[in-house]
Image (cartoon, rainbow, N blue to C red):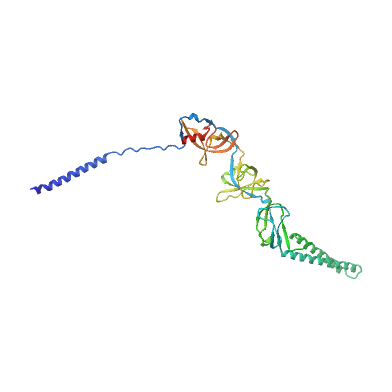
Length: 377
């Protein structure tokens, strides 16, 4: 009897537990999820202070300025003032008296070359002088004989022609010696190569005991007059409208930042670099003190003819932070907003030009650094 009731009781208990479990799941699934909360990120450019009257404001004034374009350039020699040193005689270099970078004067000996061309030219010259002497004596004899009727007119003319040809040969061989740079009164197999002009040696292609091939080879030296130089600048095609031939350009040297030179645009390259889309702009600049050296980097500033309206603020109102320029402007009650600007040139009375970022008439904090320190604290 006990066994009969054991199985039904066990089944009833199991069904009761399943019903309880189902009821719990229903209650859990019926509840709504909690609402999402949105947190606003604080504006990093906005600054709030307790006493804004501590930071006086300045109304940006209007400033008329011509548009400027600043690019980088490289100092190069003026091609019209660059002269190659030429050795017409081929041979071996036996002595070098000047080197790359030296300043030389016109007529100064730069190197000496031992050349077989000189020996051959001297040989031809001496032969021509001997032939001329012989032809002269034969012509004198022919004159005497022709005057006495001992020879015909044809023989006389042949002697006369021989003498004239001998004189031409002497003149030709003598001129060859002059071209090679040799004195006929001091025969030597070594020729001195002299500087054709004064200047600085900007290229050297010869060393001791090397060979010189005359006009067929490279020039031993190149001399440049650096009293005037070229500045070659890369200008992007979008900025070419602001550059015109004949206009002036301000040149500043990285090596001498306190020096400002003035040049003239003489050429704008007709071909763009296909890679970086720039054209070469050539500026000619006087270099009397030789401050500009070949290969130096410079900054060239081109100024347009039409003036533009810009803002001007006190120099202390500009904050230099992270390689950028900023100013603070009012942004409501006890708040200031940091605005990025592009500063221009310095102006008199401790003012500075603002190219972009704010307009004339807009208020800015006169001392941006003090406000920045207050905000950081």
